[in-house]
Structure formats: structure tokens, C-alpha cells
Image (cartoon, rainbow over all chains, first blue to last red; front, top):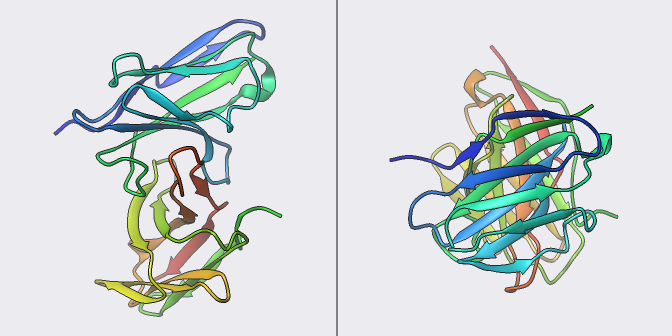
Length: 114
Length: 112
């Protein structure tokens, strides 16, 4: 079956612009996670959802970052007024169980802020 | 101090040897841990999950958890070149309003 998909796969934007990154989880998966991963580092947790409810957003770096999952399926991570330090790989993962170790990762969106 | 720490490596082992990857954690409240494997340029994929003290075996992989000493390890027996990847240790959310923590990963290279 289809895995987790993310779009766009690559995004180049100018500093100060807003970007929206989309995640389509595996159908039926109840939890959805967002991470940021720098080269040579492990995924850095940003936030996650159980169904449509955002459970923890303490990993969001600042108030320019927000996420939603309004219908408990597709999720969008929005970064407002992008800065060069926001450049990274943004990964989404979904899980068939709540608060679970079992996560299926998408291919990621490579964001470059110029 | 980061909650989950790993040696970044690279760890090099000859083909057929046992690769031993270690992870330490600082929060005694953490009860369960996972290991993910990430090939270069790819996404992480789950290998093992462990929540009890002792060993858990799955094929060539054995995860070990020692809660008293606060470490988790992953042993890969009969290492193959295809095992060359970065191995990420971490833990799932402990409660409904908690983070997922990944360590920085250890790079493993299996030399033919």
C-alpha cells in the first residue's frame, strides 16, 4: 500500500516568505509526527497529533512554526517569515497506534531558505 | 545533557563480525526504547523496540536494555555491508503530552 507522502519534496524560498509543508499519512494511521533533521543528526521532534488533536508542540522552535491536522488525516506544517536557519529536512511520520514507537516516515521535504 | 546520547562514530567492523551500538539516557522515567536504521539519504525505519530489562532478539539483531545503568544497546551479528547505515536510538512519548526523543545516531560501516 501507499506509504507516507510529503510535498513538496524540495522547496527553495526567500527569507521572509511563508512556506507550507504537507504530509499525507498512511490511511488509517491515528498519530502523525513532525520532525526536523539536520545533516548528520537524528530527527528533532517538533510536534505530533493523535487524530486531529495536537498533543505536544513544545518542540516547535518558536511561534513562526505551526501545524494543523484539522480532519485527523492530512497535516500541514507552516513556517512564517522564514529565516536561513530554518533550512533543513522536514520529516513527517505516521503511526497506527497512539503515542507509539512504531512510526513510518515519509521521504521528507528539503527546505532551503536563501 | 541531552536526554539520549550516542557515539556518532563512525563505527567500522569487518563483514561477519558483531557490531555493538550503544545508547545512554538520562531520564530514569523512560521505560521503553526503540532503534531505527537510516540509510544515507533515506528515511528512518524501525528495527527494534524494547521495554523490559534484558535482551530481545530478532534475527541477527539483539536489543539490550539495562535500566539500572541507563543504557540501551543494539548488537548486530554476522554484520553485512548492507547493514552500513546510521542507527538511531530513542524513546516514544511517555505520556499523552510528551515528546519523542531520538538520539543523534551512530554511523556504522561494515567493511567487506
